[in-house]
Amino acid sequence: MTDFSNIPVFILCGGLGTRFKEESDFRPKPMVPVGSHPILWHIMKYYSRHGFKKFILCTGFKSEVIKAYFLNYASMNSDFTINLNSNACRVHSIDHNEDWEVTVAYTGELTMTGARVAIAAQKYLGDAQNFAVTYGDGLTDANLAAELEFHLKHGKTGTVLGVNPPSRFGELKLSGDQVVEFDEKPEFGEKWINGGYFFFRAAFLKYLSKDESCVLERTPLRNLASDGELHVFKHRGFWACMDTQRDQDQLNKLLVSGEAPWAI
Image (cartoon, rainbow, N blue to C red; front, side, top):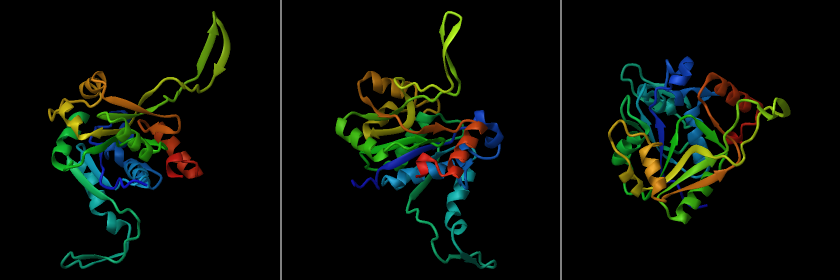
């Protein structure tokens, strides 16, 4: 397998999570748990299965929660001894297998998605020629290594994971006033939406602005598409976005049942 360990993965972790107030009043949405770990951990774990190990977390709202989680990661997952007089701490063993490099980057309280990437990339992209971007609330079983290989092969500036939109509601197919077919949860197999797992060449940064109003999904991606520089990697498998308590309950149900596609 190609070595992707030095490809930076920028994860957008700074939003207010206004549609999920039950949880986001207390913590940023990426820290809302699915099972015993935050959804952010599941996203990072899935990337790491495909060889990605370098993460830049673009934080904002309640960034201190994310900082504390990773600062205390070793002690919370291992035995340790602490001297209460000197506050010196010795971790006895590393009882986890996450060999990740995690940068927690504060990118502003109200900064929009495009500006968060621009601010963090200016500091932490380094000399990387390609990088990944994703949101802190979406899970998939897409082959991210294959998506990156596709991105490198087509030679354009950007690649977006395209997924079929899941339906939350039943669809009635009608003939006049008569229902001719009832489909509880139809699949929209020929419709594609942004699945939130991107790969970009470093040249994409010229499409971004550090102005806090820069929204990734608006001017930057629209201009990239109109320039013919954005390709789609189509994925017909599992994809889910955690926007509500109902979404969290469904993800927890999948995990508990042993049928979570991102965890298998």
